[in-house]
Length: 250
Ligand SMILES: [Fe+2]
Image (tube, rainbow, N blue to C red):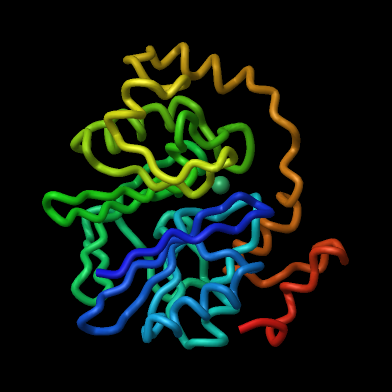
């Protein structure tokens, strides 16, 4: 298997490349519109074909490059079933393994940041990785105060679906804002300041409800754009529009 962790700096988003070497098939988890050219270069350099884009949820902080990558590579757009997006070609569902060539991705329904959010478990025996999207971050978690967020639901998702994984499972989040790259389930259970150390649910909900975070900068165009699988809506500000042109990169 080929694995790459890629980073988009303006939204601090991690995109993950997973590829089956034997079949030359690749997937990108949470690809970002601004980095289409970079992501395609990596795929080309590795001699791979992009078969899938897989989003963990409808993002509010960046536009997905799913539609642009589909236009450029003919890949399939994959979204959680509960997101119910007509633009998706395939729908992820818990209990149904998603195969990328010989790689088996196990979808875990982890709502709370949004009501349709998924994490993806890659279990290769001694090496386990979970892509936690905006559910579980390193020493943090996704916010629950917009879209369809629900702090109590996020607590339940993390406790039952993620903290039940083996402690050595590596945690790869969709974002990090402090230059960190990876954590583990054991580390988050021990020291995550919002969720670790057996914090009671009521305390977590109170923490989340009192964060008083700023209004997300891109949410007004990112959510409608991502509900269309990454087609730029008319309200994208001019200074952010250049990645919207289908021909400008790739
Ligand atoms: Fe998000």
